[in-house]
Length: 216
Image (tube, rainbow, N blue to C red; front, side, top):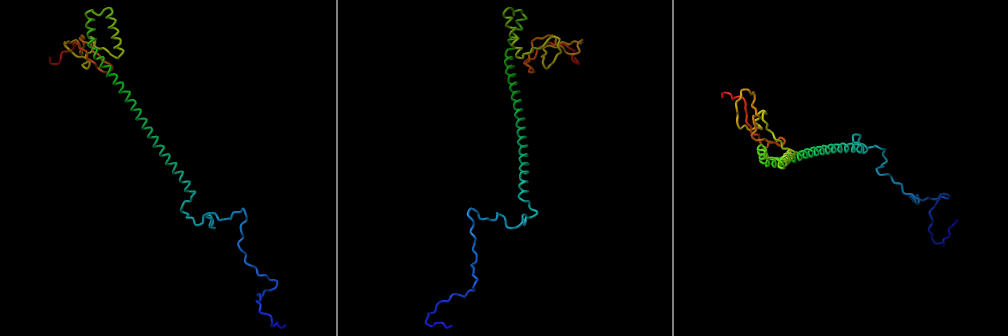
């Protein structure tokens, strides 16, 4: 068939096979509404669990188990140290309390001894008046009450005739040789001695008799 010559040249469509449609490449599928895009978990690299781990290096679970054990040991050591400190502090406080109590007793005894020591001349005057028969009536009752109260404060008289002579508490005024005596003996008390507890206020003045001194 001859092509007419009076028609202008028109662009010709590309040739295509009948029954075969050229398809465009598929694009990305949009996510569904309300469904989050799935992402790989952090650390998920597609490798199996434990892949690439150093066999000689402890895992996180092993380190987590070791940390509490070390913390418990440190807490126990600190608890023992604090307990020892408290025990040492309690012992120091007990010693301090005992020392304070002992010092208070000593101060009280010294104060009482000083007062009683100032009253010894009064007792000597009463004893001398009693030897002369002047302590009678109401004055005698006053003297007895005074001795009672001083005894309640711890004043103890000592020194009696016939007692063994003790140079620690007796003051010998005279010494009479006597071959019949094995040990020195107080024959008479010239002035009464006094003590408060273990504290000597005044020795007793006595006359002593005993064996003659060697070479006398």
